[in-house]
Image 1 (cartoon, rainbow, N blue to C red):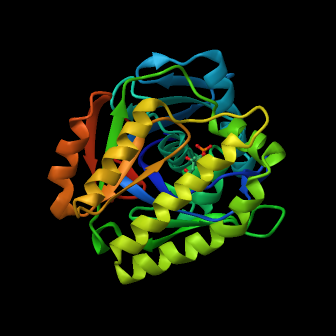
Image 2 (cartoon, rainbow, N blue to C red):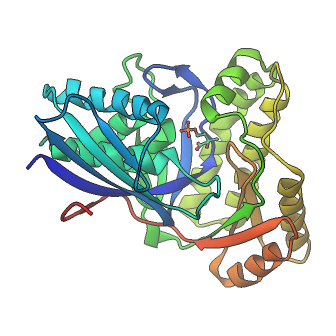
Image 3 (cartoon, protein in one colour):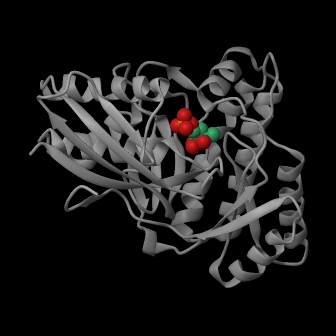
Length: 329
Ligand code: PMV
């Protein structure tokens, strides 16, 4: 049977991937750093069959839209090219994320699909190869192959062979708390793909991003090695703010924050003023992730839940990399 099932967890960037130097190969302008989370994941089964003349994509138990299927099928064609097997598949993917949260992550999705798809094709790929493959579905997916603390090195080559992720620390090496703050849903924002492109092409602030992101990355890596939470918190919060500042200079300008995003940022600052170390980061959307140490996680969670615009707060810790499940769901 040409089938396999894999699970991958979402990740949250501490130092952001923001901007591509190659749109087709998903090559980033800068290296990035993330934590793979233990709570939100995608489980994907892939079953190839000679009986199919096209891919079928089932997402959360329902046949996916044509648009979603086209995207997935493009990625499956990459696997077909790499394996030399011209076979189509049924792809059955389930996201374990809070429903209707805007949390859905392409990172866990493409990481799980790369792992299950290559295994079903008998390709026996190592993690580095999987990371390069997953990258071509969604850049941040290359980091979800690994658990714990992960760096995606941008690489210098034009063919992308040196652009992949690797683990810096295992999940159990440093247990931090990551609170995923779910805000009241708002209309859909600018997708990360479009947001990056517009920023790189038009924002005068993008040069400032590129000038400082490598220094931020090195500071964050030193903080990880020294387990220095204050140093890590300061650099990750500053890096997120710089990424978001570039969007304001784009043409047309855009911003991912809502007033609720600002309410959470304000609460984090107030917590710090009372001596509790908590730091925020924000990806390409309004939701906020707050990092703190396990000893403070309960009080931070309570304070965040008190904010009227907050729907829920999910407590996460560093989680595992790719896992294969013995049989299809
Ligand atoms: O991989 P994408 O296209 O989902 O882009 C991710 C971009 C950010 O989430 C904003 C930053 C990051 O490094 O994950």
